[in-house]
Structure formats: C-alpha cells, structure tokens
Amino acid sequence: MRVCFFILLFFPGLYLNGQVVHNTVQREDLGIHIFYQKTGGRPAWISAAGKPHFDMLTAYLREAAFLGLNPSDYDPVLIQALVDSSYKMLTATDTLNADVRITEAAIHFFRDVAYGRLVESPVKYNGLPPLPNAETDIATKLADSLLLGRFSNFLPSIEPPDTAYTLLKNNIAALYPIIIDKAFKEIPVTSLKADSSNVPLLLRLRQIGIIDTLAGIGQRPLLDKIKEAQHLFNTLDDGVLRDRFLKALNLPLIHRLQDLYKGLNEIRWLHYYKMQASVVLVNIPSTTLVFYEHGKPVLYSRVITGKKSTPTPTLGSCITEVILFPYWTVPNKIAVGELLPHIKRDRQYLADNQFVILDKRGRIVDPSDINWNSLGRSNFPYTIRQNTGCDNSLGIVKLNFYSPFGIYLHDTPGKNLFMLQQRFFSHGCVRVEEAVQLAHLLLDKAAAAMMALEAKGSQPDQHPVVFPVPTTTYVLILYNTAWPDTTGQVRFYEDVYGKN
Image (cartoon, rainbow, N blue to C red; front, side, top):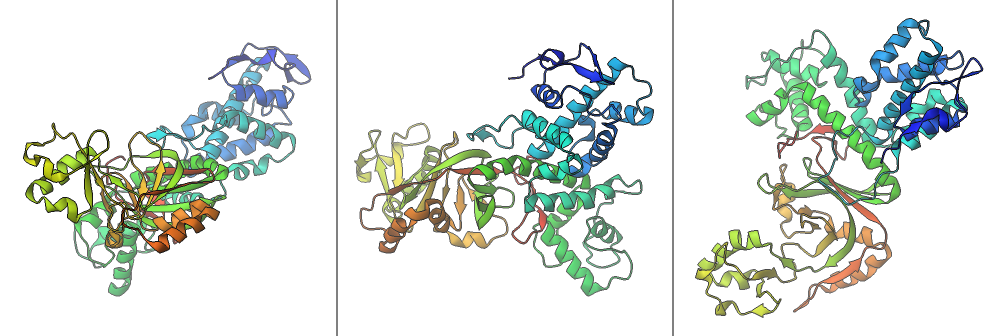
C-alpha cells in the first residue's frame, strides 16, 4: 500500500542556503520521506555540496541501458535540463521541487538496479514470501551512502554479486553499442552456403561477436566459427546451415537485447530469494536446473519440460517433501486421452505397466469387472494409479511443492531423452536427470535414511516413503531465452512456447 506524505510535516523542513523553505510538493512515496528524514531535510543534489553527487548520479543514469534498464523511466528531461542550465534558472521553490524529483528518480533507478525492473511478474504463480519494501530499503542505503561519502561506489555495491548477472551484463555491453550504431543494419542470411561467399553470413557472425573481420577467413576457420554460432543458439553444431539455425541467426538483434534485459532483471529479483534460502532453479527454454545453497550453485542437472501443447508453467513455491518410490496418480486428461485407448485395445496393458484402477472412494477395482468400451472422456469414474518401482513414470523420487497447476519435479526411467538437445516432452511436470542426488542434498542429514531404503530397492507391495524437507527450499521455474550455461557462456535458446 502506498502512503501519501506531505514531506515538510514529517521532518524539520527542506533547507536552502541555511533557510527553511516551505513548499507544497506532495509525494506518494515513503522512500522519499525516509531519504530526506535521514539527510536532515536538506537538498541532496541542487546545492554546492550536492553538485558532485548530482554529477555522479547523471553518470550512473547514462549507463541505464547497459544495465538492462530504460533511461526514460528516470526523469531524463529534468535531469538534462538541470545539466544544461547548471541550476541558474531555478528559484528556491523550484530548486527544492527539482531536488525531490531527482531523489525520486534516483531511488527508482537504484531500486531497479538492486531488485530488477519487472514489467510483469516473472512467474505465473508466486507462492514465495513477498520482497521487502524495495524503495524504503534503497532510500535508506542511498541516504547513508551520501552521508558517509560512499556514493561513488554505491551502484556496484547494490548489484547482485552473481556470476550469471555479470555474464548477462557483459553480453549487453557487447551488443548494445552495435545496435545503436548508425551504420548498423539487419541483413538476413538466406543462403545455405557455409563459405566466405556468403557475405550476409559473415556480417551476422561479426555482429554477434563470433568473428572480428569479414576478410581473409579460411574455410576451416569459418566452419569452426559457424559451429561456435550454432552452439550459441543451441542448434546442432556441425557447420551445416539449416533452417532452424538460420531462423535463430536472423532474429533481430534488438530482440536478443530484450531477452538479455529480461534475464538480467529476473536475476536481480531471484538474487533476493537466493540470499534467504536454498533455491532449486529451473529455466524452461534451456531445459536446465541449478540447485543453490547459500547463494552458490552446488548441483547442475539437465531436465525435460513440457511440450508446446502441454507447457510447463512458470512458478515460485517451496519444496516441502521428498517422496521415495512414489505412486503416479495419472491425471484424468492423460488417463482418458492416452491410456484408455491402449486399455481398450489390450487389457494386459494395465498389468504390463503396473497400473491399478481405483474407484471414487480410493478402493482398488478389478479391471475385468469394468466395461471398458462404455467409458470415454465424459464418462470415466475411475482413477488410474501406477505402482511404485523402477519402471514407474516418476522414477524413484518425486519432489512435492504446492502450485495450482498440479505439477512437480521427479525422476524418470527414460534417461535416454536427456541426451537430446531439445528436451520438451512432458505433460508439464519437470523430469530431472539428477533427481536422486538433488533429493539427497535437500534432505541433508536425513538423506542417509533415504539411501538405505534405496539400497534395498522397491519391495513387492512397496508404499511411498515420505521425507519432509528439513530446511526452507524455494523452487523457481522461469522462462528465459537468454541464459548462462554451465560453462559460463550466455546462450540464446528457442522461444519454444512463443512467450517472447
């Protein structure tokens, strides 16, 4: 909730040249109130003492685009007018009004640097604790930095000390100057020739930083550079030009820059949660998972996410339990749409795949007592459940968390699919290649009991074993098409769900 304050009513006036100057500026911003309360109500920028701070602030604001931010968000017309006028046209009241507006712009700018400029929530469902009041936090830190003479180092001090953040920022620094260059042009690559006669190809490779020059590159080095570009766009890196690679190559660079901006700002938002608890982070387009403890990555894993027709939703939640040897309760849509046709063709299908049938009260029903041909999408009063075991579709581990989508993270018996470059096969859940190791890390000391049961294996009539996760662990499923890989390279992934 935003609270309206008359600034002069809450601290002993705004001062100019030692005199209290009354104004009637209203601000619906608690951060501004806190800032001037801490600085004693004196102009922070429009004064002889504040001039160095204002100059430093304008230098910071000039870097906004390189920080994944929009310069127009931070009152650029006023800032430029003040730079051009050197304050000469300001009356006392104008000075104070301008000072407050500069403070407002500064707080919003530094808030976005620290917490991210998010046009919309990064997740469709957010069950995480809310962020602290970012504006009051930044207002306090900003005022302290001015009072303690540390403003020259303020911006880097509030940036996330995160490798992924630095990598994305470096990519922005490389790409942004190319895009704003007056000589820059988007020239589509249409030829499939992988040689130096394909000038648009060479030009694009230079624009994306793969080659330095258009002249004098031999065939073998060029093929190596093409493979490097194919790897950058997560396509088959064999040096052969195909439609999928050309589509990725020809995507306008402004879209690539916007993807980098989005990733950078979501990492800022994510950083707060990584500092509060352990985090399991899934990025859908890259089909990867990272587990963070104390803000540091301790486990990487490939994952399989939802098909385009059954996409994995973005969300934030808290992992509450690890289930060893889980049942798979088949969602009704899958039961009637995919399993029922198999059952009608072959009654042995249920037994062969360890499925049992439950009635509405959860009691096991003999499949031979059911008239299967009478059942369909609008008439299926049963639940299909798969028994525990190595062939269970969830593998031997399931990680539970609340979401309105009914999805979860789990193991899988189909390990071969993790070898594929494109891993979008699920109905929405996330299959984790290193699910068992992740479960051990989540359980910490309790992992020993789980490992003892694993060693025995799934027994006949095995029931699921539930292990509560002992410490707070957030799970975040995000959607970013520009994202660092495990080698420290930012790569661009296909927008599989068409969200960008």
